Image (cartoon, rainbow, N blue to C red; front, side, top):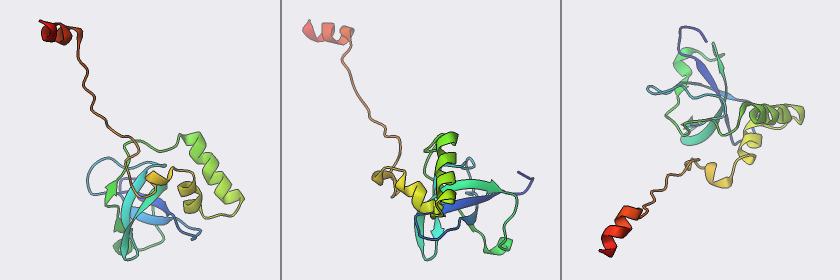
Amino acid sequence: MGPHAPILKVAFDTPLRQCFDYLPPAGGALPGPGMRVRAPFGRRWAIGVVVAGAERSELPAGRLKRIHEVQDAVPLWDPVTLGLLLWAADYYHHPVGEVLFAAMPAALRDGTAALGVRLVWRLSAAGAAALAS
C-alpha cells in the first residue's frame, strides 16, 4: 500500500452485493482481511469484516468515514478459508457480507470477543502442604 492511509474494503451483513470503503482507525494496528471492525453504517454503528485493502476509493476523501474500532487481534479465518468464502460469494453471486457472517458463530456476529479470557486459580503442591500444617 502507498504512503497515504490505505482504504479498507469492509463487508456488512446486508443483502447488498458490495463492500464499502473506510479509512483505518485513528490509532492502533491496521486491521487485516478477515478481522471484524465496528464502523458507522448509515445512521447506526455496525459490525463489518475487512475483505481487502486498496490504494484509493471511488468516493472523494471527504466522504470516507473512519473505522471506529477493531474487534479482533487476529483474523477469524486463515487466508485459505477466507479465500474460499470470498470465492463462494463470487461464484454463487451472493452478497459477500452475508456469506462471511453466515460462516461465523452467531455470538460473533454482534461483536462479541472471539477469544475469551478466563482466570483460573490452582493450589500448588507447596500451598497444599502449607494448608495441611
